[in-house]
Length: 249
Image: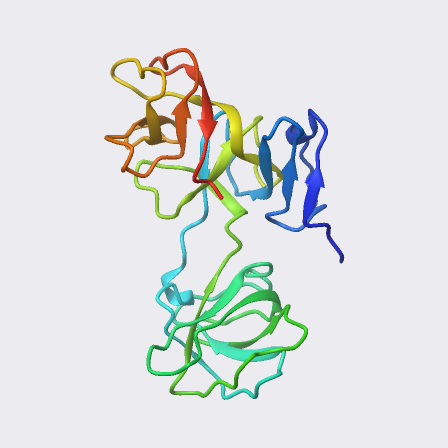
């Protein structure tokens, strides 16, 4: 299936959603006014509009620390056998995600997009196919090289909770239906729901709230990681404010 990787969108297109996938996850859509969006798949829970969403947390037994064993494989191969640790994985769970190497003692420190893979049994091996048409850039060796797998950050996104395990990836622009595909905003003028004991003044930098899922609150200083800044009127607790988004790409 061939996908375009960037779309010049029309106003209102960002609110469209479908039950089946129409584009590659992470596809960028740009509006003439500078707003940008990414194509995403919502997880199993509906998310209201104007809320921050985050990538799904990495699974420890699927190589979040990059320590999964691999079979010895020649350079140029588009397939590689990977062994998971203790947790099964359905067929193509990591499709459109990534396979990454993590072995400081060798020269193999590479990153590949996953095309497809077989189902993994608990603690079992399965064949992973990468998108790179030229295959693996270097040969890999069992017992020396190890890998990790991660889902596409725009797959099964979740509302950002008080203890966000992964980075925020965007802001919902409509009520995002569970298990549907649609758009989240990553750049430009937007609106966000404010969580604040007091109003947030014009220009205040904002980060994900530690108290209310999906909302934002003031961060301590410009040097603190933030995702938006109050654009016009002061933000009021539990109301929406106009903001400028950043740090979401």
